[in-house]
Each structure stands twice: as C-alpha cells, then as structure tokens.
Image (cartoon, rainbow, N blue to C red; front, side, top):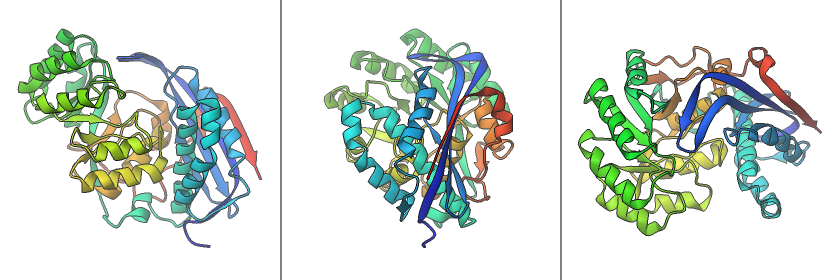
Length: 381
C-alpha cells in the first residue's frame, strides 16, 4: 500500500458551539456564538486524521452539517482509496445527483471538504510528516498573517492592540455605509502607519456605483485589496468595470466552487484569490487552485473564519505553495481555535511558524470542548 492510500473504518463528527462575549459583526449578520464541526477518521491501521466542516452560517447550520457528515460518511467507511485526492474526486462524482436532488450544494461541498482535510491529515500523520512537507519540498519555516474579523465599531482601537501583539496586516469589515467605512479605514491608516498592510471586505454588499465611489474615496489610503465588493453573481461586466477604475486590487473566492476558480484564474479581474478550505475543496481542491494562482502571478490568501483545524489546514497549503499570500488569522477569543492550536502559532513581526509535527501539526483537545458539544455521531465499517 502506498503512503497516500487508505481504508477508512470509522468516521466521527463533533458539533461544537461556544458563546462569545463580544458579538462579531459582518455585513450580512452578527455572530453571537462560534460553531465548529470536527471530523475524526480512522483507517484499518489505527491511524487517525482530523478535518473541519464550514459551519458559520446560518446559526443552526452546524448541527445539520454534523449529521450530514455521518450520513455521507457511510459512503466512505469500508472502502479503499488510492489517495485523498482520488477520494475527493470519486465522492464528488458520486454526490452529483444528490446535490441535484437536494439543492444542498453548500453543505455537501463543505462536508466533503472536511473529509478531504481529515484524510490528508491521516496519511501525513501516518507517514510522520508535516502536511506541507508531504505535498511540497519548499521547506517553509513561517508564513505571514493578517488580522481578520475587525468590527466597524472604532476598529482603530482593536487594530492598534493587535499591532502591539506583533501583527503587521489588518482587514476591516466594511459594508456598513460609505461614510462609516471610509472613516474607519482613514482612522486605521492613521493609527497603524503607512507600512501596515490594510485591506477591507464588504461581503458582497455593494452595487457597482457604490463600489466605484468607495474605491475612489479610499485610493489615497493604499489599500492592499478590496474583498467581495460586489455580489459573486454580479454581471461579469460590472466586475470588469470596477477592476478597470480601481487602483485597489480586487479579491474574492471564499464563495466560489469548482469551475468558478478556473474562470477567476483565467481573468485579470481578481488579483487576490481566496478559497476557503472548509467551504469547498479541502486540501485537494485548494492545493490545485493555490498552485495555479501563484503560477499566474496572483496572491493566494486562503479565507478562514473557523476553528483550529481549518486554520492549520489553510496554513499548511499556503506554506506548501508560497507566493506573496497572507494567512487570514482570527484574533478574537475562540475556544474552537485554542483547543487545537494552543500556543503553536505565536505572531512575531507579522508571521507565524509553520508547525513541524506530523499531519496538520496538532490534534483537538476534546476535553477543552466537552462542555460545548451539541451533537456527536459515528459511523463504522
């Protein structure tokens, strides 16, 4: 058996939901807790791997995805796969009709991404290699990071505190009105200084005239990128026109899947490509997109807003492909991250070390999460 092949004998799902003290605001809603769905897979040699399923929204969606993971896991246990990538390809094909039947495009893709991450962790852990070393010979020692989830309420205060902790790049949530958005970016630039990388994310909140007015207003601030200014399904002509008039690079990708990435990579509109490893593709899909993005001269900056497993998986792929990308790093208190990562990723001069342990580099501490589990399930051969 090759080092990438495996036979799964069991899959477990753990749904976690942790209340937060400070709600996190984005243009489409407010997070009042932090949900997380973890997957543990075990093969016939006793090796295990951990994955994570995107479960941020809607607020009731985490439990659904955990149950769906067990339902779909019945298709995996007891089977042989030549590699995680082969598993991803085969299961994607097998689930096409189910997607058509249910219209559950997102949840099914997200569960499949969690399976893929877990299986890559398993084969790397079984080989006693860090995942980035298994898929690349770059030997990266660190990756640059940026602070995410910065609320629109006096963001300069939060950002300055993170800068004092070692961060050098920052992303503001915009989409709360032109005047407030511009005011917030101006305040952050003044406080953080000209050397800090400053970016923003409108979560698809603007139409074309509003987006053009915004990029014109913030042009003097030298913004690193403007993320999802328009709806993902806005006319191609709108995106092209915004890219033409904007001196700020446009970014997107967290809400793409499949062929949409090929379209984005073949166009000059987006200069920053941002797939979410738990939302679509897992390691297999994102590694391909990342390599193509870097080859095309674009920045691969993986989207992240979840728990510790997805953070480590995103880090491992970014470390494997390199380029000029940054790792999205949630600096809010997050037990779902801390119970996995612990103190593994100290931020020093805007970078974090690449873990050298096997697989993703760490495993979840389920004891830390025990009081917050809302559902668990298991399927076995």
